[in-house]
Image (cartoon, rainbow, N blue to C red; front, top):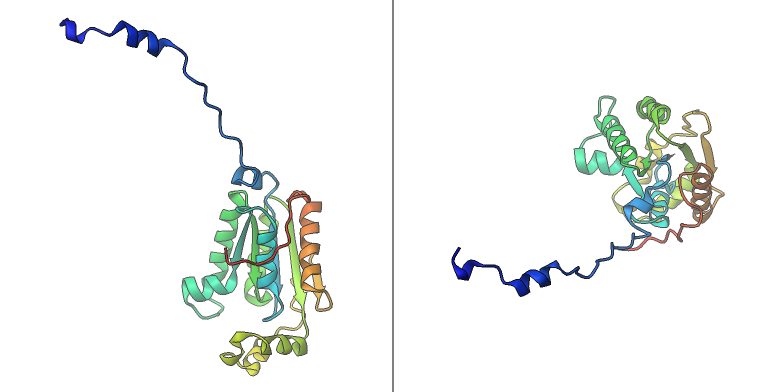
Length: 220
């Protein structure tokens, strides 16, 4: 061995000394492992146009730690992803079911929301409830046609979608008649409906009742 290639005894001794111990990073209390520690629940929110289902779904999502809730919107999947019209042969029911099953398997609370008319979506929703790996909570937001039209008139989309169109889509008391289905009538405030669903999730063991926020919608 050439003398230049011989190891430096000082360096070898220094390398043998124990270095500073690195502490493992503390777990993030709001991280995905913490957020998904409870049983993944299926939540179905149905109702006519302007019944408040989309807003309530988003508020539920914002009430819990980031990464806990997946909102699966019928309108988004059908109009944006598939760009399809509603029909008996639509791919929308199958896509909703696939996304919901994936989110549940990943440990998230899956909130499926939309008009989700019983005629075309009922069998798919019944199968999701039957196969759910954890609690399944089903809600119908029961709003009268008169109140539906009043709420629609105050929305930005009212200039593009006529009251006659909204009335033609209206389904009176279109419940699924599934076991445990809860009807929330128009007399309940939005805050009360959000609080009711969060309380039901806590009672079912799906969330920690101490880890809920206001559900305020933000741009983040």
